[in-house]
Length: 481
Ligand SMILES: [Fe+2]
Ligand SMILES: [Fe+2]
Image (cartoon, rainbow, N blue to C red; front, side):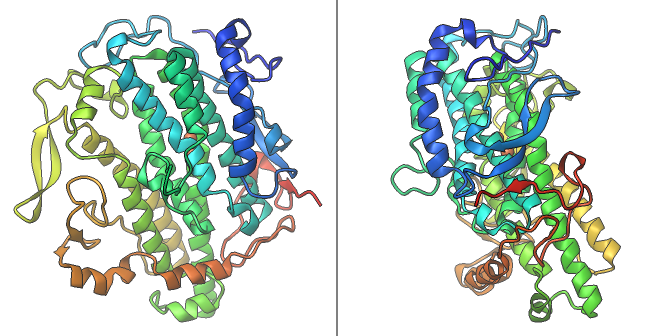
């Protein structure tokens, strides 16, 4: 295994020897100005001249891949970094199981592969667009730095996908790369490709739920693409996962700090009843039932990203060796799924039932189950924080049939505990399950910026440790006058 060092001498830092890959270097260099233009108009609003304490990937060595320093975001070194190749890597699943991994695009799978890469690529700038207003209401400089860190890395993930498109897909790839800069999150005429990436991220509670739930979908997708028989995609995704971990950290600790602050304020004020929303809100913190509603919303939107439970597209991508399962190599089976079945939740005669389906067509369902288990572990950690404060409350994930727009349950109305109800019942109760406009207004009222180093807004606790072990009053963002 060799680790190729990162070349910082060219405009585009990389460990793929771009300097000698003239055609691809030219394609990327001609894409670069459009990207910077996109970043300046659709990236973080304001703060483009601020000095932000960011980590930049400078190597793909797991032990020391990043360095921290003050950078103006438009000057961030967005690079092309692939995890080291493994000598003699074999395709780990599907009908080509055991054959050498592909270093070039297999012709028969070209269209399928291009689509997988484009969809992944589209989510990256979409989330930057969704988060572009958050800097203005950051609850601290620490949090402001975190959203900007997530944003520059999503930008780098876009570069990662664009490199694959431009290097391996010729003119088609260059066209896809151009279109990735043209779609816009939430735009009626040219929306981003997936639903959850067209939703608004109006406040910091949404941002933290998004990075917990939706970036975690990203992790699952990257994990399954990291198994790909197309080796450049596998190596790209493996390195992206290193960065992705921080995004989920931002979400999990963001929510953890929010609920810690709420519980401590309730205790200090002697409020026992979690449902006494008025009194809790009067303390300048976000009540737990409102957090629960945001959780319901972001979890259900993220479940839609896994697509239909039973899917021939997913089966084809698996069979072809392009997209595997979560931790494919640790699964004990034939990795071909010729005769296997997998239990799938379906709507049968008006009831939610588990039905055995061919495991091949149930690939999406399996990945979604793995995702749910991963989410649950995060909820367990949140519940521990609540428990330690002595407040009697527990977060639970809603039923997977709740509030769905894609797949088996898109045409039925289901309560968070899994009961199918009629429209009148839904309309009567839905404000108990999903954030109402009143909830949105209340949260918005708390979103006043705090820009003094070491200070935090009323609704969120400080982090236990700083980024890069910096002290509590470290100036993570030097805002330009
Ligand atoms: Fe990403
Ligand atoms: Fe991410």
